View 1: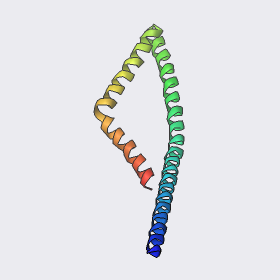
View 2 (view 1 turned 135 degrees about the vertical axis):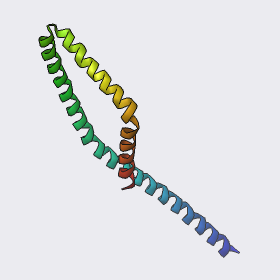
View 3 (view 1 turned 30 degrees about the vertical axis):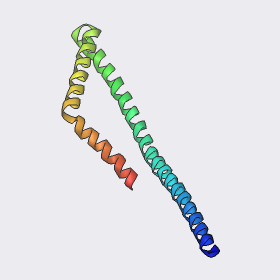
View 4 (view 1 turned 120 degrees about the vertical axis):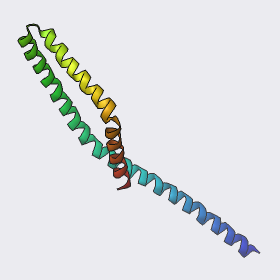
Length: 113
């Protein structure tokens, strides 16, 4: 009878150790995938920030040039702002789902890699 009790205690200890090990493994896998996704997104975000800055200064240059051509600086700023507004609306209404799916698929691909 004592042998059965010791066997059951040993089995319970092994199951507890297996559960702890499985939990630690899941935590390490999650940490690995999170760090992998973050490390691949950070360079992309840096490129996006640099690209956005470039577009910003190009927009200012175009606005000041158009303002000079149109006679008033603020007219050039209004023209460029209207262009950005129209471009933003077109992106939102026609390409929002496509961009969202592209980013979503990229993140999932990185996680399942």
